[in-house]
Length: 360
Image (tube, rainbow, N blue to C red):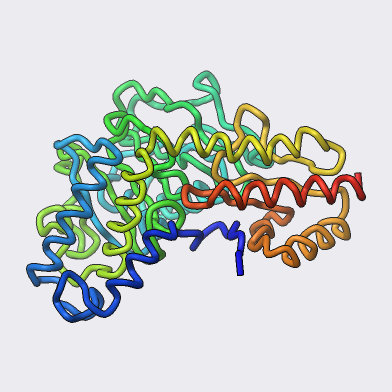
């Protein structure tokens, strides 16, 4: 059975990565054991860690002066770890609010130190990514925090804000490795793996070494970024399966032409669905402003709850799965991450076209 997986996360994984996992499940690296059974101190796992990091550095062009950390707890834990590590007494941090996840990041930071809202799109129901002139950034801020792609509302940054030397921190959970990015523009990047680069339960952190050196030390061991950096993410037992699958997915990205090729493919995929929204604007009410549209999460509503329910029911009957909007927003959401094949996009486009012919 062919299933078209539009879930927002955990989400679709490359078929080749899953097939490799299936083949190696009972015998990883000729150990006669699963990667979930061997010691994280073993030579076989050490080689896996090195390969995963090397692939991540190659695929994302991570400079040598950035540490690669493999952590747990999702982006939600990072919301608190960032201010714990970098927001000292007397400091203030700027937060750019472009959706629900950036709101949650701000909430955690406010409980730990002083914050400023440099921009909020809440009044416009987060339809818009701010232009540089709309940002009220402070040159005295300890850091600026942003969320590069907003899964709930279907908006995405297509430029990097200029912070005039203030460290920029980004939650890239939903668009990491979906296109080339200039890592040097950021002091710290974090991302839950479960949308574009692996399974749930693993977080990747990229942090510039000089910025890392400014992190606070008066924290418990497992809450310090320095602990992960100094122990190569092996102070405690890491998510061995998550790192293994990350390696498999990164290998697929590399063999697919890297982030440059994925960016072209993702634009093509998104264009097919946005084309339907633009062709039938009275039926498919797109949420995001056109210049702010996400290439990862496409969101829209229909004129009535009845129509939305009918649309979703018909979609499931055609194995178009996971199209319900987030519980806090509602509507329709198609998450079209790296591994979702073009055939699934074409199936959704055809369904939207057929539905429009009978309901527009």
